[in-house]
Length: 322
Image (cartoon, rainbow, N blue to C red):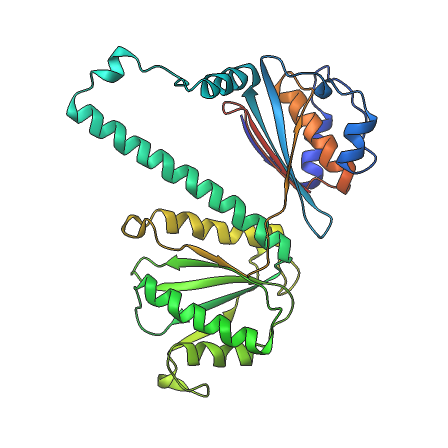
């Protein structure tokens, strides 16, 4: 079952669930204190397949939780095998005696799986970085010509950042590249607060080798501030950080699908901007419905709001933010 719900729609869906849920009560404070002061079954040693949550907190008081179902006993067994220098899983006879065609297909499938996992990790990191800087404005840096060289983009961007920091040493950003259908590259940049657009435009012109006062056909590119579309929410020209993060990470997926640039840089971040620390907790849930309730209580109890929720019953995965 897939389910994406927001605000009151999600609240009514949660309250309408017909199941006997283990009652942990409504959390009344930070998660550290909740774990300390309650009698969760989560405090017991995990048995069989249990639900584990990963919690991230952000400077604006919001938080994010990702819950997955894991086989705790199998993880312990794997750790023991590794300590003894033994393989975690023996290969079956069918796997050993694969034909060259089967081996090639298996290698290609593994490569694709690794790329998908890398894309998901990058999406998560970019989303967290944007929320850490409180990104609420988006700049788009483009070229006049059909520029397709990723290494050139990297050099131009580095020159641009040096000029920006010359005047604004604390300027923070998270930038994601995009390749259009025609092959042209440009950058989407999440920043915080109102920007000196005239100075930014001049820096971009100089970074591309033109005069800072270039006009008309002499301009080598352009800088735009993109306001959120109606479906993405936001107030005026300001984005909500989680929605801006969602918007930029979709371009990150496109960057990973660019097979010709498998190992190329796909995003940049300011120096000193670190991703939030992850806190792992064991939930007391024994079903996905209980896990949804428990994760909801955690987020709502600490932030007073659950803005977005996603779940996939077949995968045993839940994600919430608020």
